[in-house]
Image (cartoon, rainbow, N blue to C red; front, top):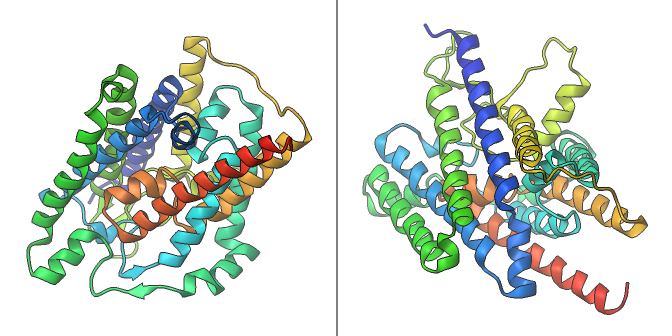
Length: 369
């Protein structure tokens, strides 16, 4: 019988170290989804988008290789299930994408900026976390469950593409997972590396490094942290996760869980989870890199409008990220790596929301607002 406490500690320590590596890489390379979209819309520069798509490609190949090896089962992931929650993904994703532009970055970038000394980002993280917890458990949660979450399509198989293809054609799911992961992920990798800017040191470090970290966290949660029979419940269990399912990195709900953990620290039922330590790891890794490179700088709001924009963006990210079941990392890399339909819809909605917000900001600048 495995020592569950010791195993949980290994998962937590591994999660912290991997998230710290993510934070350090993101701080050094300026990895940022909002920045990538902004670079394209404003300057036509696709360099940072190649970073992000390279990370997605690596995560796709890695996750589906583990499915083929029989190490993980997509049905056990946070993104599993037969319900195609298209409206939640669409509405939540658009809210998150819009919000991340007004907040000067997505949830992961916010944590990286906190580590770099940005006080604006600290405020954003707190408001984002409170909004996320409210959308999970409070009044917004009631509205969410009674509205967008009621609209879904029940699919004949798990909502990931390999499972649907296996159901339709009667082929082994593991083989299809490997083939689709290699085809789609390999295609993204090839596109990202096709131009010289995709082969720069920073692009390779961010894309390959962050993609590999997402895969490593899948392994940490789904292989190391998996117990075939929990002696307390006599059922399979994934240790140290909030959802009690297999998870990889995501940074909206975990920020809320981290705030909740801090506020009820003395509660005997309170427990650390992979998501909570990943939030701490992101900040720690970013801070270490910023201090080592001399880029640590205190930064505050410029004025009332700047404050209002960031508060609005943080609130939209918290509500939207929970509604869409993830952020640019949670759905955009971790979720998409499973080839889940809901994740692809959420990702498209996030990008559309971000483009819309950037257009609005440009219009406000033109009007002198």
